[in-house]
Amino acid sequence: MCGVSGIISESLSADGLRRRVGKMGEIQGHRGPDDRDAYVHEGPWGRMGLGFVRLAILDLDTGMQPIRCPADDTVILCNGQIYNYVELRPQVADAPFVSRGDVEVALHLYRKKGISFLNELNGMYAGAIFDPGKRKLFLFRDRFGIKPLYYAAGPDGFAFSSEIKPLYQALDLECRINEARLPTYFVYRYVPGSQTLFRHIMRVPPGAYMEFDLDEKTFSVHRYWNYHVFRKDAPIGLNAAAQGFYDLFQDAVRIRLRADVELGSFISGGIDSSAVAAAAVESHPDMRMYTATFDEPKYDELPEVQRFLKFHAASFSGARLHPAACGRDMLQRLPGIVRAIEEPISLGTILPTDRICEAAARDVKAVLTGEGADEIFAGYRKFMLEMAAAEYSSLSPRLQQKVQQRYPELEGFLALRSANPAERYIQSEALFGGDELNRLLGSRTEEPVFPEDAMPELSGDEHPVNSAIAFESRCRLPDYVVLRLDKLSMRHSLETRTPLLDYRLAEFAAKLPLSMKVNLALDREKFICGYAFAKYGLLDAKTAFRKKQPFTFPMANWLSDTARLPEAIREVLFGDLVKRQNVINPGFVRELADSVTVAEIGPQTLVSQADRLFSVIVFTLWYQAFMRDTGI
Image 1 (cartoon, rainbow, N blue to C red):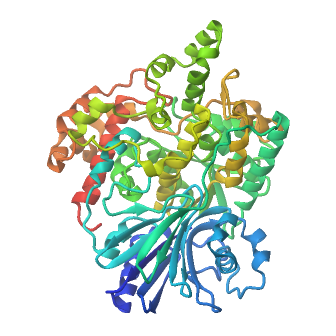
Image 2: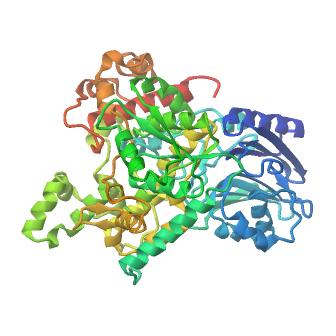
């Protein structure tokens, strides 16, 4: 887990290039506090500088980057971890290795197989390979975009980085807002796709690589992996599916325990993080575990964590639980959190995520987490709602009544349900509708809300639930879920590992019969996961089939008590900051602030006035940090 950066330029001198790359490393030094280095190459096409900051977790003595092969001068630098490097190394055993870690294995695989080497990697990674013989630079990113990679072009050349702020230093760009993506943010709470809310900054897509021709100064982006939902279910029974899933899960955890430092684990009491922790303690019995706690009982999962650990006392006898308290004072952190994430994300997970990462970073350098299963195995309520809507007309009157009782929002969802899968995907949790967007943004609603480049590959024959899973995996997962996890963990110099995002599990899930993911009759989402974990004794039945508890904070409780809000947030809601920025409607913001209520609001609430207000607060703090403040 580190930070990478690079600049390609014809105008900058070698010394100037080295200084700028060094500055890029300083800006993202939290990603790599242990060491840093730079490499500069001069060719007939110009100069290239590559920079690296290191958080040392594997191969502590020889794993520093960039790594150059003396046989042909190819160079690699990579942020993240290639977990299956042990299994891959025999393929390149005769290569001139200078290290014992994972990244050099990838370099020699590239030298042997070309860019197709990406198909063999299992891990989280974002990096670059410089091939002087071909006069090309390749940027690449893992299948689910667990590790970020941004790029930009300017008068001084082309630059890439693990974070956004270094790009402005590299190319001396003016920080401007991408107004075309404003409606997208205020509908989805984040910005999906290759564009960001910064006008000049782009993302390398997940599961893709960029090929940069150094002679022509042109580049093209290619997908090497797509999440495909199979239209025909695999002929597999429940028990065989459970065995297949469980074996893959155990191996995904096993290879993510490879490290030369102590590892910890996040645990919430839910199925995913509990299963990851339970699998990890089988080989690491003294594992440290971290959980977020709240004073508000509806949001606090500590009792569930304690019940789970007590039930499995024999397995967890040597483990140590570290609660991380999340109180109202967390709102004081919001400006710093927004600046650390860099892209505006207004879901409530950002506050407890930051707190638990801070707690873990005091003790360990890396933790395992439970992210990923909800997206690829359909673990959210919205998937159950989509299944209920798709099957409703074929149900008997008695079952229709039962489903309506479970999902009171179903009637409204059915009345407005779109035939377009992109529109349908956000329908149950869109933050602002068209009229509200017009009030909030004025005339800035002419662009299509959902970006074309964030669309998954769909044939049109998929079941609506499977198409929703495809959207979830293609856009929300990389551009919100793991983005916020990466940025907030690295804010505290902590590596996070996600076994349930092993691509083998995703490809396995894509072939399963839909009833093994969403079981409407039993009212169970992510059914195969719970069934397998209970069947093989990793989890007790109560934990294995516990309903999804969203990881958020008491947003309505905290935001409605305006007298106790931090000054920075009060300035957004009641000062003239919004008016001075002149981007959104201050009158509408004041109305939102006055309308927040705690009545009938809880962790399961998909959209509330508090959610809408929080999106405005996050955006305003983001705009002030990046578009108004100096020293980006």
